[in-house]
Length: 321
Ligand SMILES: Cc1ncc(C[n+]2csc(CCOP(=O)(O)OP(=O)(O)O)c2C)c(N)n1
Ligand SMILES: [Mg+2]
Image (tube, rainbow, N blue to C red; front, side):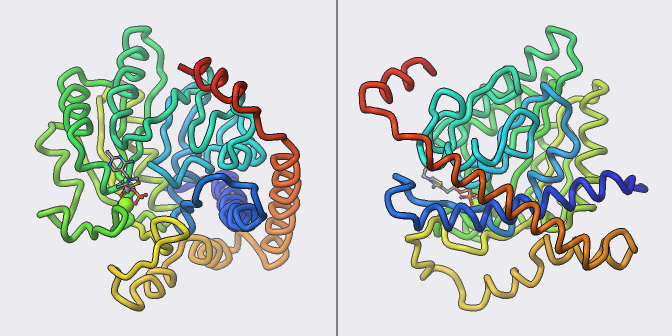
């Protein structure tokens, strides 16, 4: 498949922006009193939301994976980096919800459950609603390898398959669920083997390779959008940091993370685009400069929003419910 140059460039800029947001989140986290909860980052896993969002249309439903991928929702129309940072910092609950909890049905974001996997049936419901309304909206539900082993995922895939719903399940296999390696939590090597049992197509793909991801997601979204029913994509990646900043990572073999970092998506994609003659050193410098300016402004704007008073916080939470 030939990916149009414009699409390649759009994904490049977005990958740079996503990486710089990853860095910015750490900076904001270490600014005293700015983030009330711990920081879980998706550093090195940014190619996945970039390639997903490059295939979504306005109004499609999309739930980023678990605890670490929500900030990258800024890649969708209607959200900004400021919103991402404000959400992580528990500010501006009206627009972006609290920690990782965006709710914006008109933009195709219907929230998430802190109890991992419990939101899968909600997204199956979104897909059912699109089918009943004869809309061409699709749903992409992404979750981690740990979450994918939970019962609601199984039931959701059973129903989606039986009703041929327009939903794609995507497992971001970053090799760990907290301190548990996938090697200990799965008896299969290729997680996409499960798709066959549900009765829809499934495929694993290098989750650190933007172009490979884009191509697989494009094929799956086009099939689903034209009535082909669900699919399962497994994006193979790696959680290069601990589960969250306080994680001592004693469960992980020494050097494993460094080995995987050699395969991180940004440097690889940048090199591919340079080899293809699509970008130059000057483009790289410019993209980074622009993204840095965007992130700095977003951080300033987000941190300028005052924390809500306790009563307002409760009211805002009840309004969302
Ligand atoms: C049902 C449930 N069990 C446990 C937790 C605590 N918890 C939060 S994140 C997490 C790890 C999830 O792993 P995975 O789905 O692979 O996502 P990753 O953190 O690797 O992105 C766990 C166990 C939870 N939130 N919900
Ligand atoms: Mg995981």
